[in-house]
Image 1 (cartoon, rainbow, N blue to C red):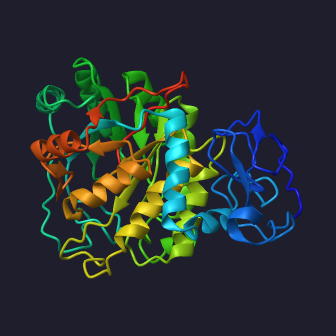
Image 2 (cartoon, rainbow, N blue to C red):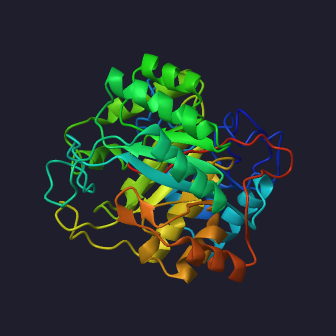
Length: 398
């Protein structure tokens, strides 16, 4: 068996990996590693030879297009994780999870729609679009005092982070001024602040950062090759540019995707590749959403994703982005307690807490607390083993 090379690590290719920077610098060219030093070769896990370095690469979500030779996570390696037996995948995800987090701890975040409906985008999953007869009426932006009151209520219920969404393609300057006031009001409660407002310029991102915004959510939604089937009013590069603008402003990045929108397994692998290979590092928080089908939207009749396939997505997000908060986001209302427990076991360690996710239902707070109690889990957001904690943002569409 050939011994694969790993330029950014000192690895024998026989199951031991030294000086392994699992967060950003190691090129996972020949290994499926838990982050704890027990590094398996791809040939061991897949029963095939390592992907040649000169194989045609999938374009990575960055202006610096990566190849299989320098991508942290080549698509073929992510597909190999999808193809692992379910128990093996869960075991590896738990290994990575325990390396960086307390596996019994779940972060609680609250989400509020501060400006609902009337969005000019045509995202096929979203009832807030003016293109879809989903019955969501456009509303004006909430006032800062009302948002602060909602934030105080969320904090009293146990939330540590307050995420705010506005249905815009991109905010205007007058909108930024109002959001700035809202951010300052929420910060006074002591909660962490996250926003999802659509596309941002560099100047807007900096202005919101200066006001106190800690995190910004802007999801990639799906794989580039499937993106045009879901959205036509904004291209993939628009999303990547916003993430770059936010990161350059010093704001933590939250970006994930939605499953169950008619994509296939390879496209799910492509989405995770985009996220895991973002430059200079993967997102600080990764919301994995299960499509909430709303009557009147183009995706209302989409076929449900197999529950185990969704759990696989959680596990692979955890393995490929080990220090990120992986958020079990939209779609929990349709999930059984057993499925949610499997997601926690796979590495999900954050949820939205409260009855609404922008315009769709979410499990109520009592149900969430009851589930955590039954699992002997607890709310919190500390990171274990002295690793730096990269906070995340919200998991709405952005």
